[in-house]
Length: 247
Ligand SMILES: Cc1cc2nc3c(=O)[nH]c(=O)nc-3n(C[C@H](O)[C@H](O)[C@H](O)COP(=O)(O)OP(=O)(O)OC[C@H]3O[C@@H](n4cnc5c(N)ncnc54)[C@H](O)[C@@H]3O)c2cc1C
Image (cartoon, rainbow, N blue to C red; front, top):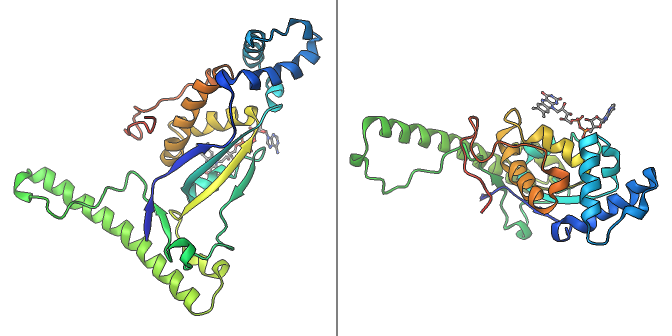
């Protein structure tokens, strides 16, 4: 069994300052106002116009854009992502991938949620801890152990089903939600704005936020005009108390 870290990768090239992308939206939107004569080649008119569109709520113009992001996450997070109906998806298939094959190292990959503590180190010198710290160490151990055992048993069950002639699409029934998956989400900027508004607030699932907040922050740097009005509490917030993934 392999444990992998959740991450995202922006697959779409974004020009310096997002100028080309903004100019594409500007070209389209100026048709509405017949103000093509106001286009300036340096991109300043595009920034101004797109900023105005976002402020006005004229977001339909943002639909003339596309952004693909590859997420490595667990099946639980992926299940939430695919609820976004305006987006398009390509996801690693548990029907066609046979994780018992050499290609996958003959093992399953899982995402360990950050709230499941690391396995305590074997050489921990217990005498150096207070009673309270020891209690916490014991709880961490129990949580880590329960999670690890559940994954290990799922992997064993999957292997046994495959070994007894079942196809991956049949054996997958024993796999847990923390199974690692890869999923490409392609959507226009309007839909990404909707996704960020729903998936970055503290009400969203913490593992979803762990990916979406840093992604939003990166896009705010790359194409500020389109995304910078969406506020996100990250890295510090009351729910996750987790450090940012942004280096
Ligand atoms: C905090 C949180 C908790 C959630 N809990 C649950 C839960 O317990 N159970 C559950 O089933 N789901 C849950 N969801 C998922 C939620 O119900 C939505 O399916 C998901 O957030 C997608 O939202 P959306 O419809 O705005 O987005 P999209 O599907 O991406 O649609 C984008 C926008 O297009 C418009 N649109 C799309 N389709 C239609 C339509 N048919 N009619 C009119 N307008 C449309 C809407 O304006 C919509 O906002 C939860 C989501 C969040 C963020």
